[in-house]
Amino acid sequence: MGVAERKLRQREEVRTSILKASWDVVEKEGWQALSIRRIAEAIEYSIPVIYTHFENKEAILLEFTREGYLQLSQQMKAAKTLSDDSRRQLQDMAEAYWAFAFSHREHYQVMFGLGMPACDLVNRVEEIKLFSNVLLSVLEKAIAGSSQPGQDVFLKFHSYWSILHGLVSIKMMSPTEGHVSSSLVLQDAIGGFIRNFD
Image (cartoon, rainbow, N blue to C red; front, side):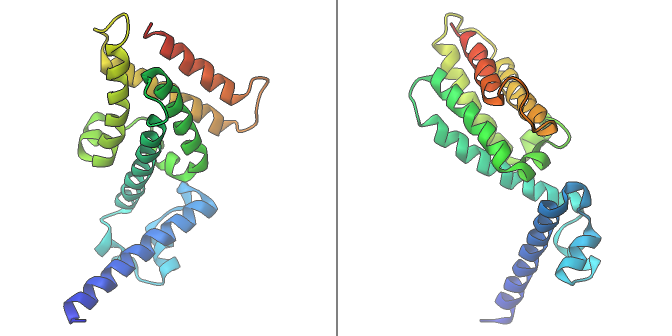
C-alpha cells in the first residue's frame, strides 16, 4: 500500500472514529451533551483534528441526519411494498414511520430536533428528498384514485407528515400510555386522513 492510500485510509478511520464517538455520547447522554471537545477527548485527538474532518458540530449532526433519513426512507419503501392499494400503503407507511421513530430515537431527534426541515434544507440534502419522494409518490396515486383528483399533493404531504411527526413528538415527550393507546391514536388519525380521499 502506497503512502497516499495509507493516508487516505487513516483519514477515513479518524472520521469513522469521530462519528462513532459522537454516537456513543448521544446514546449515553443525549444530543445536548455532544460537543467537539467531548468528541476529541473520546478519540484522544486534539480539537483541531476534529475540525479537519468536520467544519463544526452541525456538520456532524448533518451526517447523522442524512443517515437517519436514509434508514427511514428504506423502511418506508419496504412498507410501501406490502400492498398495491395506496390507502393501505399510507397506513403501512405510517406504522413504519412510527416504528422507526421509537426504535431509532436518537436519529429521529436529530432529524427533527428543530421541527420540520425547511424547504431549502430539503433541496440540499438528497436523503430528505428521497424520503419526501417516497411519500409523494403514494399520495399522488391516492389523489388520482380519489373522488377529488384535483387535490393539492403538497398540502396532503404536509398534512400526512405533520400527523406522523406530531404524534411521535407527543409520545416522546410523555412516554407513558394514557387512557388511549398511542397505536390507536395513530390508526385513528391516519384512518381519518385516508378517508379524505373518498
